[in-house]
Amino acid sequence: MVTLKDVADAAGVSPSTASAALRGMDIVKPLTRRKVIRQAQRLHYSTNVSARALRSGRSGIFTLIVPDLENGYYARLANSLSNRLFARNLKLIIQVSQYDKAKELHQIQELRSSMCDGLFVCSTHNSAREIQQVANGLPVLLFDDMSVQNQACYDSIETPSRDGMTAAIRHLHACGRRRIGVVGGHQGALSASHALSVTLRRNRYRQALDTMQDLGMDTSQALVACDWSTPAGRRTAHALVRQGMPYDALCCMNDALALGVIRGLAECGVRVPEDVAVTGFDGIEPGAYSVPTLTTVAVDFTEMARMAVSMMLDHVGQQEGQEDSDRAPRRVIVGYHLLKRESTLGRHVTNTVQRDPQTQSKSI
Image (cartoon, rainbow, N blue to C red; front, side):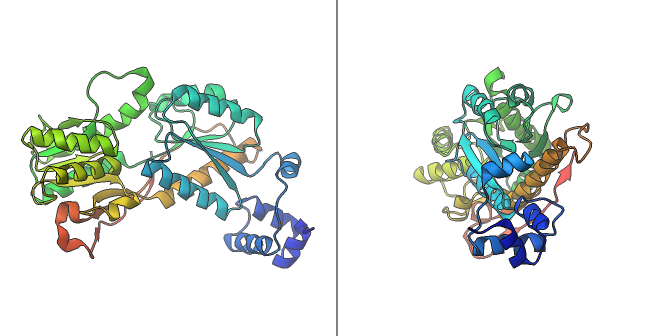
């Protein structure tokens, strides 16, 4: 049976360094960590999770809860996060809440009795306070926490809604479009069960309107309310064509919606981008293969995962008494770049996708 000492000897480090490397601790240099992991894999060394948890109080296992894995955004986030943790010899368990508020809270509550070092949550329904009530002290990091600043209780990583929507609108304006519809907004009162997802929609919509107004554009008919899904985008495109298509550009709030819009317009004989230009938001892979290819605000998922793991391990370290835990929750907005493709520039850009310079992540 291969032991930790065997791995350490093969890597030319001490057993304590090998142990720290296999647990993904920051005290080990990346080059040393990779060397230890490579030797552990070569020797087929496997960690006894139960024994590790008993010795150190840490299992090296983390959980991610997402609403839906059929949604390309959540699938890509899960993939990036899993890869980042694997690179540090840590493991990720993924659970799907199916947009169910009660189910999500139950999943979090059940983690209290499992060997889980920390929890990543993409919640569209539960506030940070509601999650805190059932997490029982478990380290938590949220993606796109819509809590107001004075009610935030966990670190959060956010998509670049403000800057991203501004970039998309300005690009459409630069392409000569003046009748822009913002697709995916919310119409009506906020309900308690959907307040968080609606807040994200409203934030993106308001930023789009602010940018349009700054550019001197009419915003009185800008709102195109619908769900954030491909079928909803297709239905919305059909409805707009029946209304006489009052827009020469549609700025969609996510890629899934934009891909549905492109499909629906094609079914109605509307050309993209000759008649109507279309933009998305997320940067999921299907947009690179649609006809036409999709211009989109591409979120930096690799950087999002890197920051998420770093912030989570900081939190876990605080619980072990390594740092002062009485600090305010951090909010970081991840970087992005605007991928300019055929849906706004035409077929001549097929092999020359234009990328705006990538923005850097920033704390708020």
